[in-house]
Image (cartoon, rainbow, N blue to C red; front, side, top):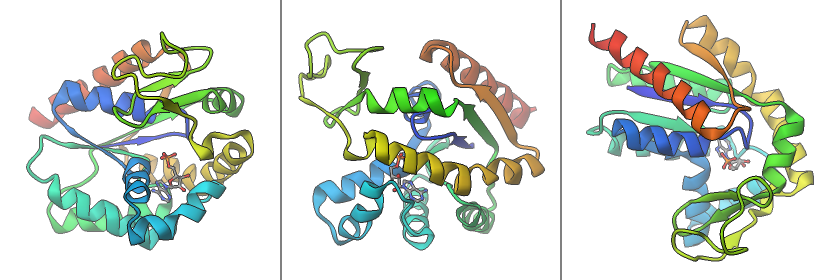
Length: 221
Ligand code: AMP
């Protein structure tokens, strides 16, 4: 199964993708995490994408398409893949469809998490991340037990440089201009469902789990 999670930055795609991947034995592929890991390792690719990311712009389609398609190749043997943060433009979606059709596969389900801009800004500017386990906290809504440290492994939490208010506004602008049109693209294919992303994470997860189970059931029958 190939599942795409759509939604603005901070809609909860990463959190929900990780939980769904654990529940269904699927591979969680986050384009943002892949790029951040390249930067951390100091690779040539990491160097090429850093400027775009820090400014809140999308990296060029050809770069990200190459990275994701290579990862998809290596995920072939898993029960399925959850794409988080990719595709983000209609052109990326076209490249994905083309690559999947070459291996007789397709995107099965696209879930778009709906969260208003005002809520996104509040969520992202207060977000803190553990660079060791990927745990996500919020300074007000979900603070760690010990201020500034991950509950699981005590790693100091980081405020992503692109999680500041100015950059969030730029990322939202990129989302509305370049990513939102993907909803129409996938709706036309009859595989888009919209989910309210504003309730608590457990309620959203229950709804997503129900949708994935339903889609898996349809695929079997
Ligand atoms: P994310 O963690 O998904 O919010 O991604 C962080 C940043 O990585 C984005 O603001 C972009 O600069 C870059 N990025 C991640 N995924 C993509 C993509 N599919 N296309 C272009 N840029 C991306």
